[in-house]
Length: 112
Length: 112
Image (tube, rainbow over all chains, first blue to last red; front, side):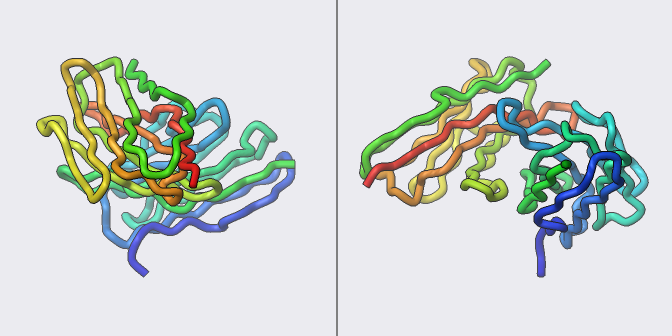
């Protein structure tokens, strides 16, 4: 299916565990992004990538790691999950030129 | 630092009314502005994208305007329907960067 897909849709993990959220897009968009959405804070940028092997920090990168070995995939890893990382995570992509963003359906992560 | 504000935070109107949602941003050096819709527990759906050189965009019953010099955008919804109930988010792309900066959203309820 064409588009941007995130997995898993829901995840419960324990404090201290490593967890990886997956994001896959089929358009070969250059840019990909990870946002988190929290009540009272809105949407905040965690990391973004301009191309394969090029990543950069956003507003709230601490505790997260990203990689982009292939253009279509942009996984987000929480190295040692904390309760403050309980949130809804959205992946997005954007092509070059005058295009807008397209968002995935999100992953609801709960850290207990 | 770019800041985006949406007023009001919540709005409740009877079905059939025309309504306006407001978005303001502090730095006029934007690349584009995008309006999204978010249903409860769902992802973000793009509604309209306005490039910095444009004044407005229309899609069906929706019309978005952009006044870069005053740092304002409005989303006009004509003949509102209960299905329009959702949270509407405004986001600006910063010029020279690929990041979107979001407002906190307006939660819209259309009463039958």
